[in-house]
Length: 266
Figure 1 (tube, rainbow, N blue to C red):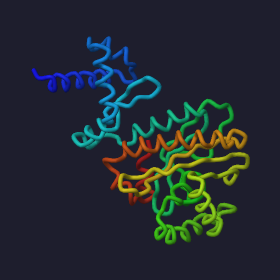
Figure 2: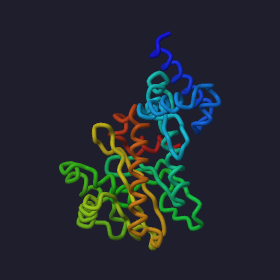
Figure 3: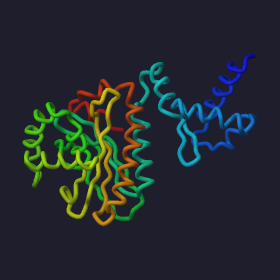
Figure 4: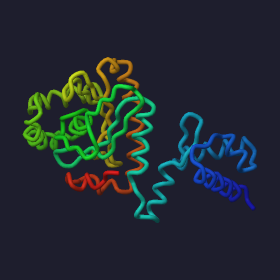
C-alpha cells in the first residue's frame, strides 16, 4: 500500500471518529485510532485546513466542507441545524441575547434566537418576528450591505414599512447606513428598547449577495468600545461559518419572501 493511500485511510478513520463523537481533543483521536500523536496532529491539521474539521479551544468537530459534501447526496438535510448551533454557541460565549435573521425583500425575519447566562435578558426579537430593513441591528446590517443601486430602490420602501417605529424615516436610515459602513458594523443604541444596544454583522453568499445577519443585544453599559470590537470579531467569524453551512442552498436564500423565510424557522 502506498503512503498516499495509507494517509487517506488514516484521515478517513479520524473523520469517522469525529462523526461518532463530536468535539474531541487531540488525545482523544490518538487513543481511539492507535496512531502516533505526530501523525494524528498532521492529519487533523490537514482536515482543518480543508474545512472537513473545525478547531475551537483545542476541540475538533465536523466542519462545513464535510457537511456540504453530505448535503449533495442527502438533499433533505436540515441546512439550518448547524447555523442554529452557531447562534447558541455565541450566546454561551458572550452571555447575551443573539439573533439570526434572513433577508426577505425589504424585511428581515428572525429565524433563531438564543439567550446567554447574563441575568438581565434583552429580548428584542423572537423567532418569527419580522422587521423592516434598518429597524434593529441585524436588519440595519443587511440594509447597509446592499449595493448602491439596490439600496436606492429599497430604502424608500423600508422607510415606509418602518413608519410605525419611532425615529425611523428615510433620512435617518440613510444616516445609519453611512455610519454602519464607516465603522464596519451596525449599531442600534436604545432605538428599539431604551437602555439596550444591538450590534449586527451581515451574512453573505459566496457571490457577495447579503442573505441575512447575526446580531447581539445587551444592556448599554455592557457595550463599551472594547467589547463592541470583541463582539464584532466573534460575529464576523460566526457569520463566515453560517455562510459555509448555507452555501449549498444560498441561491434559494437570495430572493425569499417573508413567508418563505419563516418556513426556515427551527
